[in-house]
Image (cartoon, rainbow, N blue to C red; front, side, top):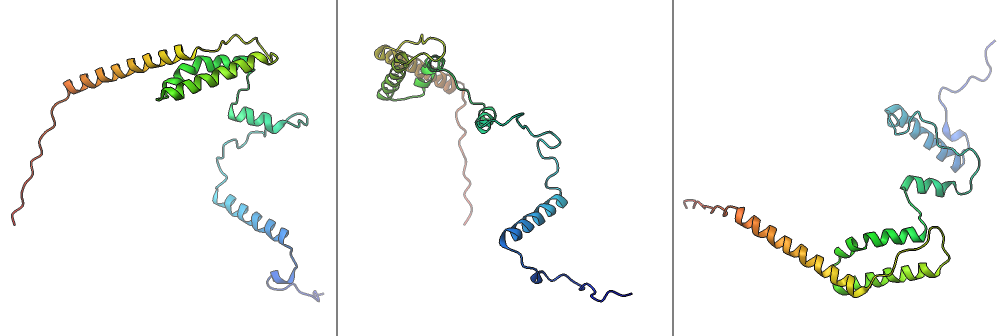
Length: 174
């Protein structure tokens, strides 16, 4: 016996009511399928490896992943001030103006004094404030030494260089 209602030869998309969310989901699915067929998802980093999922629910999972991914280090204030003290001279050497150097040293001293008056959170604070005038004098000496080295290197380069060749221009006949 033949079917009394044969299916239409083609599907009419306007015959079915689809809301916007379903249409967007279908469109996104279609684009993903085409990208898979083109091979755009082949050889992605981490393919074939399990997702890093926590064993139990942790409300700070995103913060821990951020710290791990960005390799952030959160240290107690005493250790952070020790690191700043060790790197302060290098940071000062990048500054050109004496007033800015003094300001940087004063800011460092403020952080050290603030750390001394706070309750210790970790190892004891052994970093001492720096004498502004002594540190500025040491900065000026290092700067003068670097300038002298640069002048000596420039003088050595000029004695070893050959004089530039003269260019000869040819006149074209008119």
